[in-house]
Amino acid sequence: MNFVRRYLLPRLVTYFLVIWVGITMIFFIPRFLPTDPVQQFINRLVAQGTYMDPKAIEEMTETLKELYGLKGSLWEQYINFWKRFLKGDFGPSYYQFPTPVIKLIKQSLPWTAWLLLVTTVLSWIIGNILGGLAGYFSNRRWVKILDAIAMVIRPMPYYILALGLLILLAYIIPIFPIGGGFAIGMQFTFSWENLLILLKHAFLPALSLILIGVFIWFQAMKLVVQSVKSEDYVKYAKMGGIEEKRIVRRYVIRNAMLPQITGLALSLGQIFGGALITEIVFSYPGIGTLLYNAIFTGDYNLLMGVSTLSILLITTSILLIDLLYPLFDPRVRYR
Image 1 (cartoon, helix red, strand yellow):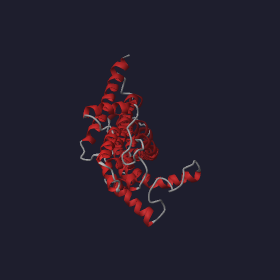
Image 2: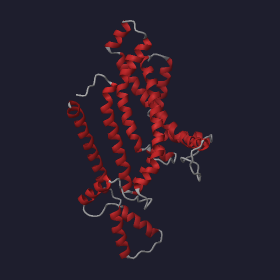
Image 3: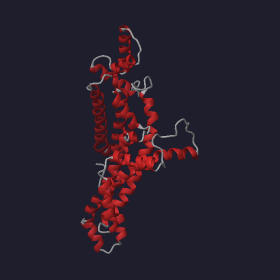
Image 4: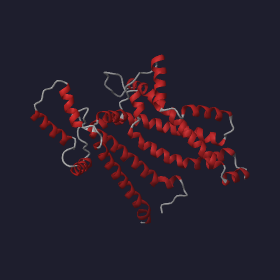
């Protein structure tokens, strides 16, 4: 009972409060933008040479406002938004009208989920192993070499590294495709040939994310390990004659991993926001590209759908790691 009242309940209250605040901000912010999706849609029809009399334009405006949830006062729109949200309905997309937003998200989400899930986990594992060893054996030559490489790659923006890989391995040395997630005109079926095509298209985006990610985790883990290495219990373990490998594995790395686990939970939640710039550079059909199109076209519904999904998954991942953290750190108790 103490667990529910003192530990679980406060976190659940915070969880739902953060979701409410985040989704409320997503609702209001697009409505303060200078773009009007309804007017843009009508202007596009007119620019294409479609003749519409004023009465038809007025009727279409009212219909589109209702579809986009822009009808009525701001408060009425807010109430209607929550009613639709609880049903999982974000309305139709603007730039792919009349396709529902939820359908576009379902189409793009698997691409981003697999790409970023694999790259995040791999970069986390590799970066923490290298960073842990580098932090403990900081005077080794290979550590200095890795530090020099990290100082070059770590500050590099994603899009610079992505463009560099694209130019080198798709243009100069045409090993991988220039962009896309699958071969044009082909329908995906589960076979080894199609799997290889998928991996070939995903390799460059994955490589750009892994290279940056590895050195981010490497530097963070190295600093934590260097701090843990100077703790008294590590010095006592050395004085007690405990084998150095055991000290590194059981005492240093294990304790240094605790903040990294929290960082992993946050990274996993952010996966579903998409790797915006990376997906655009490689024309990868994921959530990042979808979000870019939503911002560029002023698509309220699509923007709210993608952002809401990201908020839900980030807050949920934080809640889960908060509840599971005592399993990783015995010093934390459910109290």
